[in-house]
Amino acid sequence: MGKSVKILTVLVAILLFISLFLIFGYAQVEKTMLEVQKIFYFHVSAAITVYLAFGVNFLFSIKYLIKRKPDDDLLAASAAEIGLVFCTVVLLSGPIWARYAWDTWWTWEARLTSTLVLWLMYIGYFILRSALTDDKRRIYSAVLGIIAFFDVPIVHFATKLWETKMHPERGAKLDVLPTMRNTWMIVLVTFFILFAVLLILQYRTKKIESRYDIIAQKHLQELN
Amino acid sequence: MRIVIVLSCLIVIALLFSAIQVPIIDISEIEKAINDVKSESQVNIEDEETLKKTVALVAKELESDQRTRLKYLVSAYMIIWLVFMLYLIRLGKQQRALDQRLSQLEQETSGIQDGSIE
Image 1 (cartoon, chains in turn orange, brown):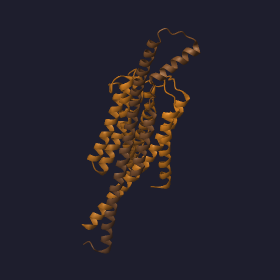
Image 2 (cartoon, each protein chain N blue to C red):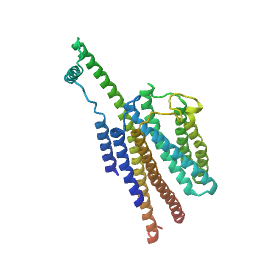
Image 3 (cartoon, each protein chain N blue to C red):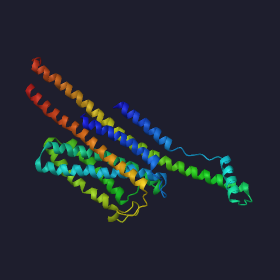
Image 4 (tube, rainbow over the protein chains, first blue to last red):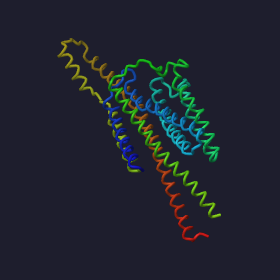
């Protein structure tokens, strides 16, 4: 692990504990949802980090298709993997909020359904990657990464497109107090740094793995 | 790595459980509060016993509601923490497996250089 990554990792760990302290000790309790609203800080921040992660996957998938550099494919796959982890966090924390707010664990509402579809598409992305080898894997997964990303704007604008009343509409005026806003901003920044750290770690691992495969293949050829 | 994971889990569990301590209001506190209000506002309460019982019931109901909300809150954060921890454990395992494969390859290639592998 490089020195900069170590510093970033320590920073993320400290920021995560500060975030928890701010959520439980500093941010005021919201008037309608009361304590349950505090799920919002990690839930929404994770959802925005999902956009970022799949956005990185989208960009590097396009870059791979243009330049055909294997490193771009590795970066795209790393970003997708971390995006999937954050998407899992969103899909697991959401129903707990929904149980209290809407009196149900799950409903086929537009945003929920499109988020589940997004998660399933990136699961498919990794199934595809594990089923194919080398060039085919890179090309097909890049194409699937680009197609899957089109669900991100659908998730984001779902409440407007289908006029559902369960999630707040985009741009809706919410009664957010400064302590709540500050806390949320810190959690969001923490999640972005966490994403960057995980992306670097995952990318390095994948790169060493691919180098290992090349060396191992050469070694086998030499033996034969 | 393992120490960090275990330590972080312990800290988070402690943080969350300290955050969910619901203050329990007992009947003596209710009586004291009613007496304080009576003396401060000079309100004449005719049926004090019924009032005490009602306030106690309301306090119990509010406590129960708060406990339910906090259960949801803690469950959500526990699950989020668990997802991140499982991913970190997976990353660690991936790194260890890679290290093993690399050292194995290193041994094999050094064998070729020494001429021990035909």
